[in-house]
Each structure stands twice: as C-alpha cells, then as structure tokens.
Amino acid sequence: MYRQGDVLIVALAESAVPEHAADAASEPRDGRGRLVLALGEVTGHAHAVVGPGRLVREAGLFGPMLLHVPDGARVVHEEHAAISLPKGWYRVIRQREYVPGSVRIVAD
Amino acid sequence: MTEQGSWRTTAAATGPGDRAAAEEGVRLAYRRAGLAEPERIVWTRSPREAVRTLMTTARPDAPETAALGASVRDAVLGDPWAAERARLHAELGPQGWSGHWRATGAGLWESTRTLVDRVRAGIVDELAGDRGQETQVRLLLLDAALGQHDAAWLCAFGSGDGSPLEGLAAVARHAGWWWPYEKVAVISERPLTLHRDEAGRLDRGDGPALGYADGFELYAWRGMPVPRDFLDELTRLTPERIRGEENAELRRVMLEYYGYDRYLDESGAVPVHRDETGVLWRVQLVGDEDVVMVEVVNSTPEPDGTSRTYWLRVPPSTRTAREGVAWTFGVGAEAYEPLQQT
Image (tube, rainbow over all chains, first blue to last red; front, side, top):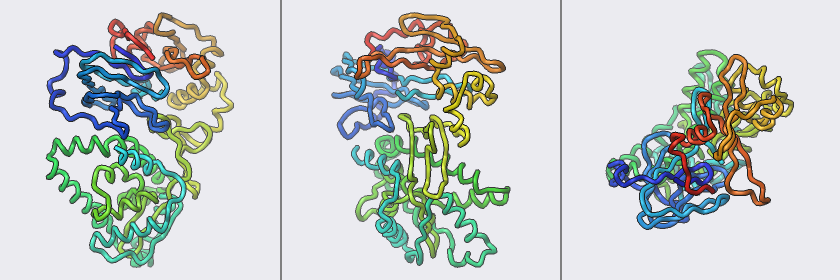
C-alpha cells in the first residue's frame, strides 16, 4: 500500500484481480505518454504513472481504478515525491471526505 | 491526447473570442446542414441575455416571431451528431466506442456537465417568474447549442477540416451557447470569469465563480451554490455566527472558509484521539450531528520546508484517527498501512 497525497495505491494479489480486468480497455495516456491516476483540473498537476502498464476504470463514481505494471513503475506528481511500485496489480483509490448526506472527493 | 487538452482549454476559456471566426462557423454549420445561412447573427453578453431576448422575440403572439423562424437545432447540430456517432459506432463497435469515449470526451464531460446544469438552473431561477415562463425558459434552453461547453462531444467526434461538425467546432472555439433559428442565429459570448477548484467544481470565496459581461453570475463554494450575500459575510465570521447558522450546508461552507483549525482553537474543542496517522477532533453542534475531523500532516514538505496540515471531515461514528484516515480511502482501519507516503 502506497500513498501519494490524495491517492492510495493498494497492491492486489493476482487472484484478487477482477476477471473483467484482463480484457477491459485501458484508460488513454495523456499528451506526455503517462497514465493519469488523478488530474487537478486547474493546475493540471497529475498523479501519473510513467512506464509500461495499463489502467482500467472500474464501475463507480470516483473509480476506483485498477493498475497493472508488468515491469514495475514510478508514480510521479508535481508536488509530491515519486513512488516506485514493484511489478504487479494495484487498486488506485481517490481520497474522499464525509459530507452529511453525501460524499465528495478531495482535491489536493 | 493533446487534442483532449486543447478541448479542455476551450471548455474553460473566458473572455471574448474571435467573433468573425465564430460567425463563419455558424454559417458553415448551416451550409453543412443543407440550410440557407441565417439572415442575421445577433450577439448577446450571456446565455441569460440570449434567453431573455428570445423570450420576447419567440413569444407566439409577438410580431417578431416570423422574423426568427423555427429552431433548426436538430438540423444544424442534432442530426450531424447522431450521424457522426452512428458512424463511429459502426466503425468501432460498442466496446470500441466506449473505449474511444473514455479516451476523448468522458473526462471533459464530467466537468462541463455540472457547469452546464448550473448555468441552466441559474437562468431558470432568474428569468422564470411563473410556471408559464418557466416552461418557456426551459424550452428555449433545449434549443441551445452549447458552444464551448460542447467540447466533450467535439473532442470525441471528428471535427477537423471537411468534417460535418467543422462549423460547430469553430463556434465552440470562440463562443459560448448559441441558438440556431431559420433566419437568425443568437450567440452568447463566453464568460469573463470562471473560477474552479482542482476537482473542476465552481469555487470562489470572494466573488462570482462564473460571471458574464451582462452581470449574470453564479456563486459557489467548492461546487455548492451559495447566495451572493453569503460570501460578503464570510470575511466577518465568528464561531458564534457559525454555530447559529441553521442551514447545515451553509454552516459547512462557513466552517471551511473560517478554517477548521481556527474554529477548533477558538471554540475550545479538544482532540479526542491521536495516533501515527493524525489527530481526531470532535465538535458538537446544537441540533445537528457532530463534526468529526481528522487532522493530517502532508508527508511532502512545502518548498519552504514546512508541512501543510489539513482537515478532512469523516463520519460522526469515527473513533480513532487511523479509522478516520482509512475511511477517507474506503478501507478498514486495520488494513490501512502505507509502506511509503509522499
């Protein structure tokens, strides 16, 4: 389990990877060839994965998303130190906040 | 995905665009739809002003109705979109289309849809004095092409040179909402100001989050609509005023603006739990559920070497700081154990 700001990256055992993930289409890469885990709408700052891999969106409002990095990867962000991920599958979770009657995501 | 980046910029663009280019786009869109070009193109300063103009002109008993002609939105926009969508569907298949949409418009749609809904609601609020007017305003809003706010669809569909959507794309790059009628096209300028937070929600504490040249404005705090007067009051808040606010949502905004830390300090709140993940605070409010928050220190120091502390509200049932932080990520307290945090 790794945390970069408002994003939590949880290692998944191969057996825990949902079946549909293998065939599901990968999220597109951004203009710099990165897999964007979360994008700041105003600053354009992003939690992003550099290197080979796939990002698969799961059902639900805020994700989560599944990340597969067969060779390992680095997670970078303009304001946070980079994190090295060992190869494997991960679940990517955005931080949220309690709002009476609803829940909203956090923008850091 | 530079294309997506450019449409993202278009969707959030403010200030006047190139009017000649927008008008050329309108005429091209009419021609591509097999229609005669509009006789007149009328500019307005906001979509509210456009609707107000149309309310008078399009009233069935108004003598000007004939001057406007019927709405040609379907011919100019609806039909070419449907055709382009059908073409892509056939070419890519249902799965391919869904992947293509995610790669292009999906991310843009999430942020612009909310904005579009807010603008519509604001116009209905201001212009609909009674039920009859409300119906008329809503119908006029359905006649609108969304200009820059159609960015998500234009990003997903081909809109380059020679495309059936080329004209619509040209309008979108330079203007806001617009109304195509047989004889007249009414175009609204883009807003002058647009303030959003990192999540893309309308957000401003000291003025309108969205403002047009004619004075049409929307006020919001982290996406939540707030009255204009409310913002003026934010700079003069006291803990007593916050406690006394009966509207829970407004009180929440007050707490955020005032600063949870300051409020906690001045209202004599005490931390109820502390561990290596942070500090848990609880504030009791009369007639409302408790405000329970975790205080967390950012792991990466700021450029000046200090660490930013922030507060996140968690469910009132939270008992420990760890439980609170784990909840913000949707995992159980026992499972929350990051190997590395930055």
